[in-house]
Image 1 (cartoon, rainbow, N blue to C red):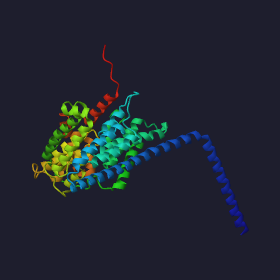
Image 2 (image 1 turned 45 degrees about the horizontal axis):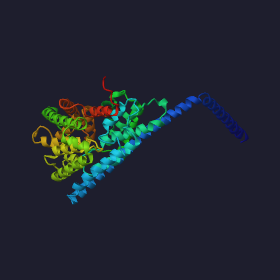
Image 3 (image 1 turned 90 degrees about the horizontal axis):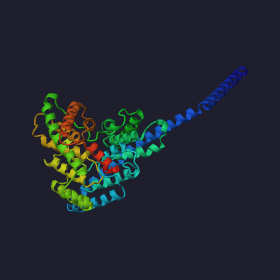
Image 4 (image 1 turned 30 degrees about the horizontal axis):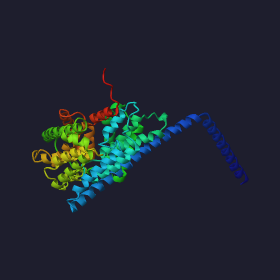
Length: 465
C-alpha cells in the first residue's frame, strides 16, 4: 500500500511539474507573440461585429416585413368596412409623410437601391449629403410602413437594401483596419444582406451584390462578406419560416412546349417593363409639363392628388392595387383566387403614381405583382402550351428583369421564391430576353437614377469664359 501511495504521489508530482512547465512555455509564447495575438483578437472581434451586423440586418428586415404586412392588412380591413376612408387617409397621409421625409429624414425618398449605388460612387466632396445613415434607416422603416398602411403601392425589398447598407456602414467604425474591409464592401454587404433577408433568398442576395451593387468595386466578395449576407438570410428564415417567399409553387412543362410560352412572356413583359422603367426615370430626371410644374411648386398638393388617385383606383378595382401586391400574387400562384383581368395594368398605374409621390418605397414586390397580373392575362392566349402557374412565374421574372435590367438577380430571386429549380432554364431565358427587349425602351433604372443623384450632389461647374 505504501509503495502504491508513493507511486501515485510521484506521478502527481511529475504531472504538476509538467503542467508548470507547459504554463511557463505558454507565458513565454504569449510574451513573445503578444502583438500578434492582440492583432488576431482584434481581427476576430471585427469579424464578430461584421457578422453580428448581418444578424441585425436580418432582424430589421423581419421587423420591416411584419410591420408592413400588418399595416397593409389593417388598411384593407378598414377600407372594406368604410369605403370612403381611403379618400381621406391616403391623400392626407401622403402629404404628412412627404413633409416628414423632407424635413426629418432627407435621403429616405424613393426605392433605396439607387441611393446605395450613388454612395458606392461617392466622390470626395464636402457638400455631400449622406444617403445612408442610421437616421435614414429608421425613417425608411417608419415611413415605408406608414406609406403601405396608407394605400400606396410600394414594396419593402428595395428599402431594405438601403437599411442594410446604412446599418453596415454604421458598424464600420467598430471594424479594425487590419480586417481590410472598405466602406464600399460594407455598403455592398449590407445591401445584399437586405435583399437576402427581404426575399428569404440568400443566394439572390449574393448575386444581387455582384450584378447590381458591386459594379464599382471588386466583384469577388470575401468569405467574410458572404457570411454576413447568409447570416441575414438565416435570421429571416428563423423568424419567417423556411418556406419560400411565395411558398411552394408547382411549375411543370416540357422544354419544347415552353419555347413559345417563354418567347411570348419575355417579349410582352420586356416591353411593359421597359416602359415602366422609362416612366420612372423620366419622372425623376426630365419630367416636364403642367403636372411636373405642380409637383415642383406645390409638392404637398401634388402628393395629395396622387393619394386621391390611388384611393379612387383602389375603390374601382376592389382594393387590389393597394399595398405591395404580395397577397394577390400569392393567391394567383397557389390558385386560391382569380384576379380581375385589369389587375396587372391597374397595379402598373398605381405603382407609377406612388413613385411619383416621392415617398419612401420600393418597386420589387409591385413589379412581381404586375408580372403576375400580365401572366394571368396571357394564360388564355397560351392555353394548352404551359400550366397557368408556369406562365405567371415566367411573366414575374420577365417583368422584374425588364424593370430592373438585372436579369441574373431577377431569375434567381424568383427561382428561390417559388422553388422553381425545375424551370431554371426557362426562367433564365425569359429574364435575359426580357431585359434585352427592355433596353430598347429604357436605360438601366437604378444606375440612371444613381447617376442623377450624383449630379444633384456634385457642385455645379462654372460656366466657360
